[in-house]
Length: 227
Image (cartoon, rainbow, N blue to C red):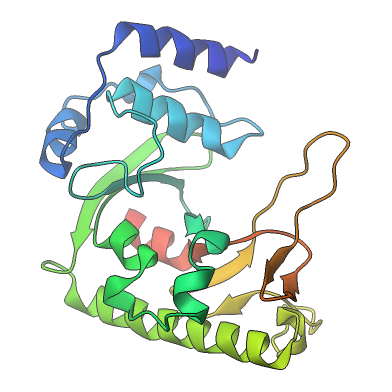
């Protein structure tokens, strides 16, 4: 067991856990001692998990961490994972879900973002909701609709996503799809367990990617948030 996972286990025993509200977590953040968090290691998820544990947020299978929102810690300049694409495919492809009814919107409709620099030092926190940042959600809506449209095209044509004409910085075919506002994207997010291959992302007999993918907020969003 890693040092960080041992720390998570130790804190878990010491803290009481319950589903908290955005307002309760904001209050805790005002007095939180960020020095107790470890410097980031190879596993980027360790800090976020320990952070939530230290705040008394229970790790569970619910869509959101909090009663009325979500907490997301991030490193300045890096993209922020929202949710795995496989959880959203059926509602996007079969139901043509509207953004406001989607899992992506429910994950982001009221979110506390906590930023750190690359050395693991706390920068700032900010809560974003549709009430205080309507333009942000309009851009999310446009990006989500663009991504959803291209996912439906890929399934209809039986294409992998890298056959849709999107390219990376080198001009090579790419599975990554970024919305027109450069705010929301889908890209590969997968880990391989020992002795096993990556699990492909498929729907209705169509392989969209040979690995899992997720929705992300692009790195520029975090950079702007940290200013």
